[in-house]
Length: 392
Image (cartoon, rainbow, N blue to C red; front, top):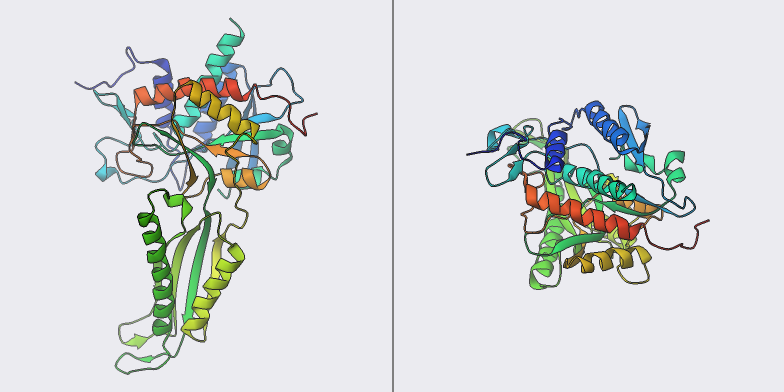
């Protein structure tokens, strides 16, 4: 027997499923419906709502709950609205139905990444208020806006990842995305000849150098049980381009790579290494960046950081085991850290397989509801951080 309706369902779960049904799927997300949903919640919770269009069609929606002392720094709770595309034929249920099975698992795109966190924020605020009365088209641009400066953000929470163990993962930094396109030029000719100095030969040398580096990093990760994926640099060959016909040796070929550079890597030296691989392959081999993040920042995870101190202490009081890590991919947190706002990535989903971007992305309702409990305690603790230098 499956549960298809809200009868007997916790209202927070019903709200979560309602948000999941809004099709904010790329490349044409329905941001209008999502913003309307958030505006409605803001009105119900007595929060002010401001919409900032940072790029055509891309709106950052800011819901604000003023504290008792407006001179203190604010806490920023960040959550993106969009979700990645789906292949419906590989799903057990419609990815935008928010189907809940008899065991309590909710199947939907965005169940883990990261609409769950959006609703957990809102429901935690609702509980606290109840107690009180008895892309590159979003955050990257938003941090440059006067509306962001007006928030006076002192600390931020953002998305994390599920953890299949009893522990909860918290991310204090992330790797820098470098998308690199290597182009090789050489002598063209007929496909029947042994032509010297071809584009393919030289490109092959670069590919070999980069994949050899990849294998060394992979072995370094696998040989050290204390290392997590975010602590090493990964790279994948994601695209090969070139050629016009089977019997024509092309004058130009290219290969595209997705590097995720660990935050402790010397970026200048790493770029010089890229240059060296290209030069070693021969003349006419160059590279360019489609994306290059050069501002890696680390949020301290010790008592020198009062926000971490409050966060970790609240988790300890809830008997939560934390596993601090470097996020292996990229989130909005990098833009916040780059402008001096310490940020932690935290999605309270333990005993849960990592299914973001996967077929049958799902989250158990009990895990979701516990996340609301956790955020309620965390927000209360973080809001009690005393006056910091710079507060006025």
